[in-house]
Image (cartoon, rainbow over all chains, first blue to last red; front, side):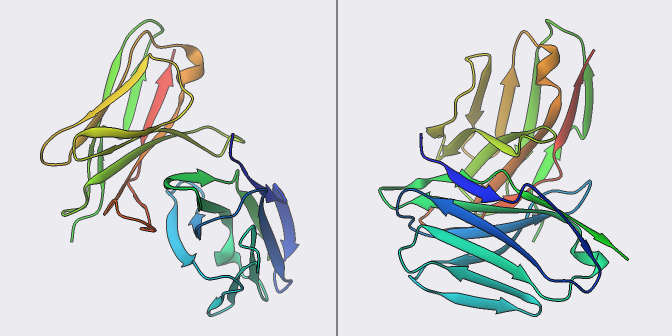
Length: 112
Length: 113
């Protein structure tokens, strides 16, 4: 079936280091959404990208959508302990944009 | 605006029993989706309801069922519980139109003994 592959599965960084997680699809996506789930919490919507090549920033977070709309990345500059959690990407397939397809998530741990 | 409300927050059942979980979406949201989350398995999509109709379905056995009422509240039922059904069950609501974000509840933690 349709899949969104997310890598890496886990990432351990020192506070102040940068972090990037990637989502890749073999099919063209209608959009890509990013969510963050803190330990013990529920996923919280961060942002949505819709246009080819789109780049959006939220403070230290930078989100990109690939030119071919098949991949996306989330980059965090100078991580802080508050960034700890699992980051999920989710996307609607261009052919059937009502079913949301989820990546397995990247769990980020930050050493103070 | 009140968020998504899921009840109960915690539940302990034994094998073979059945369980019903409830989800009240954000006011005005017509779509409710259900997910199962277990460690290392990410979010496994169960089904989505929109205007009282099941619009999308994941790859779960028929023991998992749901419904949505006219006020958009939704229930999920699991029959003949198995040990492997122990998980966090999350409900998410959205407006239901294209490219809308999902708003999650705190989930129901189900433990099967």
